[in-house]
Amino acid sequence: MTVTLNLKPEIEAGLLGRARASGMSLEQYLLYLVESAARPTTPNAAAAEQPARGEAVRRMLNFGEEHHLDLGEPITRKLLHKGHRF
Image (cartoon, rainbow, N blue to C red; front, side):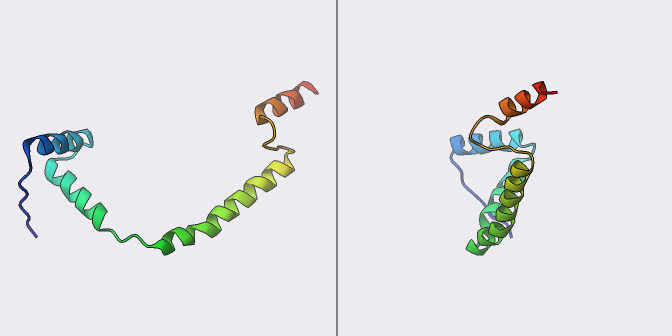
């Protein structure tokens, strides 16, 4: 499909600057913007990530318990003091 856009000069200049900064031609950049806007966003996609996120948090907590770390104090200070014991 071919579309013609009549952009105000300042809008065109701004888009052209963003396109160049992204290493694209203006046409490529506009196509990228349109395709990004047209992608379906589903609430189910965010819900599908929740189990993976929960698993990651569980693994981090287990790591902290295994290595006797907590978020109550800076971890680096605790590790530094452990290093002086040896």
